[in-house]
Length: 240
Image (cartoon, rainbow, N blue to C red; front, side, top):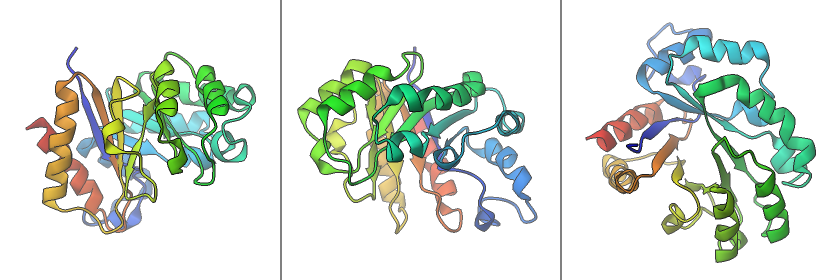
């Protein structure tokens, strides 16, 4: 099958994105519906703090068309409170809630705290507990993890190592294809992006598509909606 690019922004419910991304007068309840007419995927950070209810998921599904993809950030209980330990206790409820999205569920995105340092046994136990039928991605924000042993553990399950540009300790860019049959990129520079930078990312991600790897790329939720426009530009350049 042809590899696919999923390009969007981290979230959608931002009043400050009016009028640059959303038309004047757009209400909060209508933002996801409008977002879905412009971009076909989003990274949901809401799920870090809240387990989505049946009603919440039903609202997301009603507001988007078939084919729309939600990448969900994993609950903080999994990554920050228990720090990847005890997955048998922390994973099942989150997975149950995530599966409510059905075929619109994209990768589950796990982000560990910066103070969590490399622990091979901890990582191996966590990776072994992840479901085989859902794509998963891991962002580790401590440089101690960036070693071959980590990559080997992630590769056992096909877990993508997230590259988060703009964060304090992003993964090496040359590890994007080391651990999984897909890549996951978060573009989060505080100062925003330029045409040349977005074009550079498009070229890099096209290379992964050509190699048969699906691409997930999400721009940071910025103050005025510029990154929503850059997400559209990145998608278009990749397609071109």
